[in-house]
Amino acid sequence: MKKISIVTGCYNEEDNIENWYRAVIEQIEKLPYDREIIAIDNCSTDKTVEKLKNLAKNDPKFKVIVNSRNFGIARSPFYGMRQASGDAMIYLASDLQDPPSLIPKLVEQWEKGNKIVIGEKTTSKESKIKWFLRQCFYRIMSTISDENEVLDNYTGYGIYDKTIVELMKQYDNPNPYIKNFIAEIGFEPVRVPFEQAKRQAGATKHTFSILLDCLFSVLTTSSAFPIKFMIICGFFLSLMSFLAGVMYFIYKLLNWSSFQLGMAPLIIGVFLILSFQTLFIGLLGEYILSIYKRVDKHPLVIEKERINF
Image 1 (tube, rainbow, N blue to C red):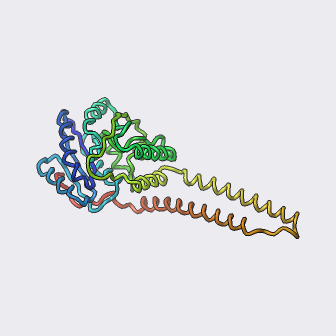
Image 2 (image 1 turned 135 degrees about the vertical axis):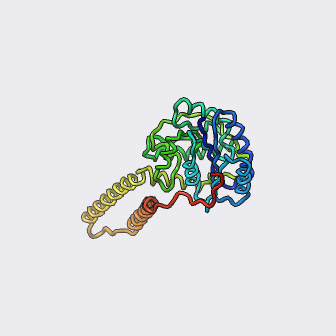
Image 3 (image 1 turned 90 degrees about the horizontal axis):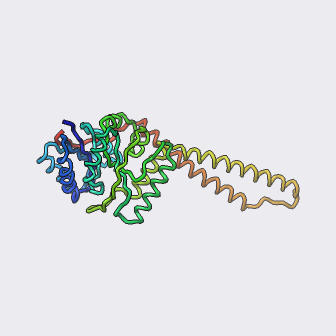
């Protein structure tokens, strides 16, 4: 009998995790597969861990990993995916915005031989403003990435063959972002559309700061756009400075006695150059930080506790 692994990441989901578990069990038990469920908790501060342990106590196939601290919204779920031992692995969020009812369709597409089948958010019940801003954010990431395609309307929900899980284990990135990973490995995913449900309880973890962190991760790990931008800007600034210098030199020669160099051009030029230098140094700092993280070889996650493994 084939085995399906269900993986989810948790952080302060005490009001959702039990409903999520029941909804997943309802769907997976309809299918003729053995199963395991893996929940990785990212150091929750509410009763999420307590509820996870209660579920694991009553279900030996429900496995729990508790992190020693919060390792971020990208690293913790990716580490959880690596622990899957099934013939296929399904990842879905524990907030019930990824509908468990889609699981049979994902499995059906996987059985047809597709290595990656993703859930694609075509519509959403969240606020129109949030939806619009997220669309803009994903479009920017797709534009600046050097990969063939950074998937829009996709946050990780989908089914992955065990060959993809093995590639995840080999993926050497200190801050793995699932969208980047799928784009890098090159497998063409099959898309299954769904409407994103409204969050039933708790607060979203995809805050502006988290999205900004993901954007910088894409910039420094899979995009040369900032470097190219700095080179182009540097060239044009140098050209402008050179032309301005030549212009003032000629003007001085033609009006040697009457022409005086004013303070305004000097101040404007100095502050313009300083502003660009500050921006470029900051971007270079992000690249250096990304290099440091790769060289430092910190583990993705440090586990505090494992249950039912």
